[in-house]
Image (tube, rainbow, N blue to C red; front, top):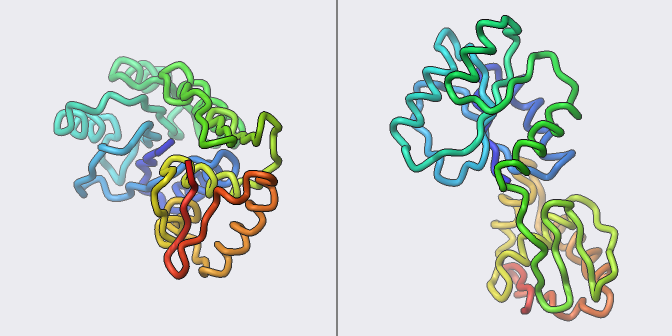
Length: 219
């Protein structure tokens, strides 16, 4: 799931990004400049601060929605304002949930998962690539019906390959989709691929290396 964090405090934004990517495997993008144009085309959910360097977060959200009318995803306001009037105004403006700073990381993750499930974002059923089953809502994978224990990185690699089954997925694509802003070498990816192959057991042959370019998961 792709999440947009609209927060002008980069320290707070990075903290939220780390929580969501490390604990839940979500893909997180930060929007710190409320004056900059941004596309919501691939965004599933927005985390919104109310005070954006002097500009109302609700006004900014209204502006985004008016310019991109096809986007109707859920919004969670994450702000230090705990006044009843502000909370009422947020919900009246179409915000789906409200979290007051400071918050516990598990509360944030829990609210995102609950809201996403209600909105159908996490209801994607298990899909199969050969004998490999992927269960996105639970971050689980099975081979021939038997669950395999994967690290978060291994799961994200397998998911990306399974989503593009039969197609070449380059190392550069994996770096972007799996590791985000973290710097990794090709060797790091190769090590994770090697570990993943071992865990795929009898289905390891379906994970092919395209020398010097990337990998392909055969259907």
